[in-house]
Image (cartoon, rainbow, N blue to C red; front, side, top):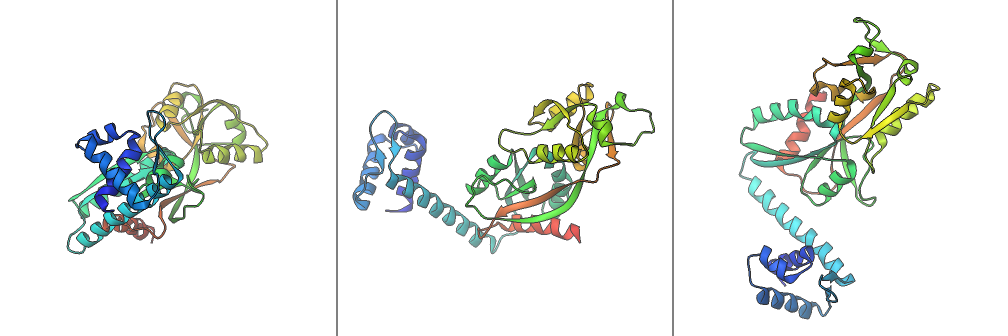
Length: 299
């Protein structure tokens, strides 16, 4: 069994049909069926349950898919590592970011590209679970996220570089300010407003942190909307629909015309931020330098 056959097997597993897999591989169906039969004969196992229109992996097939994916990733990473011995910082750096951390990336990407203009970026946005899955599949190398990182897989080990903590601030419609000079608000005053909360079905860390702070001050926010998008919540605030609490860095990407950002005078709670990557896995030279840039800027 060789690398080519492993790629064939993985494509069949992905597509669930030999016909569809052959089309994706730009080959005829009979040769692909023959290659699958050769793999099964060599291993002396059945890799697919062939009942029904869609091929389903047997337990042996599931194990082979897991090991084959790891082998091909290791091969790809080895090739990259060898090539990087003589190359500079080039190619593409794939980064994931939770929606509330996107504003942290542009200034650092700008600085990085000034040093390494041949490098391009691919940026994925999502919650912890989605980005964790992409990290484990190696479609991204790094994640910028709020901590603690809610891992997609309990068995997966991550490394992290903690970044400076990010204070929470109140975000309200400008028209709700008590006066032009108002620069702060109390938790009690904030609790009297209808509240908009940033959350997803699977990650609720920020939502729970903010609600906990309200409760520690003796208040319960009246949540009128839960939303997965920072931009949508800001638009709702700008329309005078409600108020919210965000880490201060989030607001750097939004104009403060129809909205007001106020310090919370009687609460000092911070959002922890970090860069996440897989432990004991290959990191490209560009990813290592990107992490080091953040580390250097902290000192």
